[in-house]
Amino acid sequence: MADNIRDDVKHAGNKVAEKAKEAGNWASEKAEEATDWAKEKIHQGQNRADEAAQKAKDRADEACSKDKDSGSCGCG
Image (cartoon, rainbow, N blue to C red; front, side, top):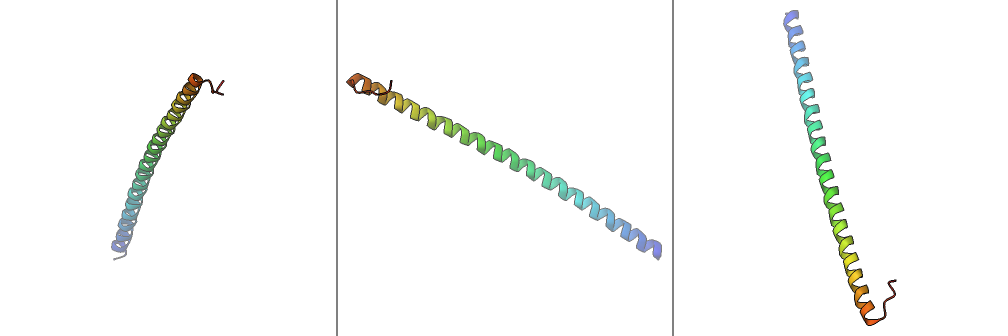
């Protein structure tokens, strides 16, 4: 009887260890997915910021060009 209980406890311990390993793998996988998502969003944000900066520069250059034509440009 003691051997049966000992085997049952050992089996239960092995199951717990197996499930803990699965949980750790799952958590690691989800953390990697979250990291990839965050990197993608940062990249998208940087692209949008670059586009906005380029649009602002283009509009400033256009405005300066119009002012130069009229003789009232202080752009340099």
